[in-house]
Length: 613
Image 1 (cartoon, rainbow, N blue to C red):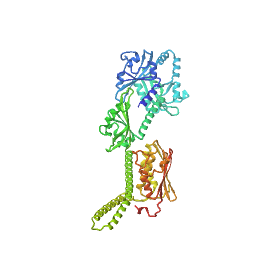
Image 2 (tube, rainbow, N blue to C red):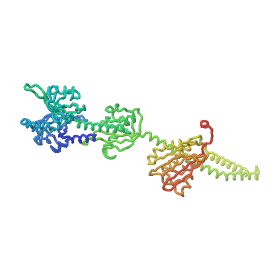
Image 3 (cartoon, one colour):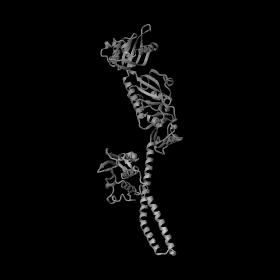
Image 4 (spheres, rainbow, N blue to C red):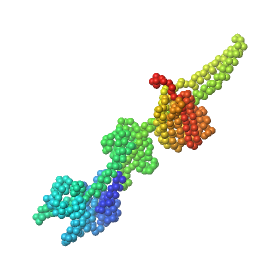
């Protein structure tokens, strides 16, 4: 709106007439450049002070009639500048319901002086007639031109004056003949017509907008016999108005085409702007809400008032703005949406609050994906911990089994040397029983450390890698990590556990992201070589030092802090890949990046895929 107002002021400054606008308190709201040059800058002053240095209304003032909707035109002399003006006054209806008055002072001092001279000099009259910058013509009541100046010939594209005087006014000049009849009705009734807008035809038939001001010519008996007309070409004004409309339409198109929800409301909360994305996101059609619904309905109870409080406060940022933050919206169907809202107050030229405008970005889908990713990562960490605990349990069980069986064998030998009736034989049996019970416990621990194997089937690694990258895409983008993919189209299937491969690939991507804290590029490619399908993850991160590269697949080894990991990820991944008959290799240069290559054997079985599911 401010941009449109600025454009309007710029246009008015190019007009050679003096223009000013006052409110109902007779305070000057606007003066164009010409008005300021002639009367001095009077914005904020009373109009009678600006025009006549007075302290009360001018004796010719007709503002009250204009404020009631009447359009007036008069000629008057202004003593302050010693000039005579043609004054045109018309009401302006403001968006807030008030009425202002627009006054146009056209300096006619020279014209009035020339008119006085014309009474004594026909020659001077002819010179003025011919050299006026506006078109002047005299016509008969029946529709023939008697005389015309050069300006009107130029406006209408005639080079031969006689040819112009010969045309039929109704049929050859007026685009709409009924407009000529309306003009005659008005001038017959009042003796003059002021600022009558019509469409004239140029010689080649092109329409041209004209503002027609005309006086009736009378015979000695007082009968109207013809008309004296001044014709002003409005093409330039129409062009400016068209540009103004185009600017407004372009601004509206931007709002409507924006990929985010944009809405605005007046100070009472009544919706005044609602773009197409808002329709799509919140479910309300624009014609259902604009001027018909309050903005509070799209927020949870009390949220709209909270937003207004923040906008008007300086505790959260500059006054008049609502900094981007998470907000919940309520759709037409009652469902809620999560996203970010940015809003601002709109002020008029006097700094008064007019309306609020906000933009909303729906993040529901993204937030759900992030939650799903978080759950997957938690499951992966849990799986890593269980696997590590299983390996630790297995190691402990294996280490204890050997001495236990040694003790058990020793006790069995001792039993052969002690008679059954001996009291020591009973103690020996009790010790052997406890050793057997301990061995059984270790057997159960070994069973726990070797859970049931994941179900394996023929899978395509391109599909699994693509799914995992899609899951991580948003998170990588937020960390300024770019993804480059190069998948081999003819990739053969591998016989593997989908879940375990997903865990391996998720771990590779997470490690690559953590290795590029300031952003970088993650390149993921698949290829096929010597009976193996390979997936390669290359990052441009911090790399791995030579002293650590041999340890990265060891349990509990990590270069991260305790918050990010416990050193189980690569160890578990390595175990999964080995269980599939594959291998993981790593190449790294400190400060340049790291490449992990996962190799899995091609599924050689000819058994149909469906028989394994």
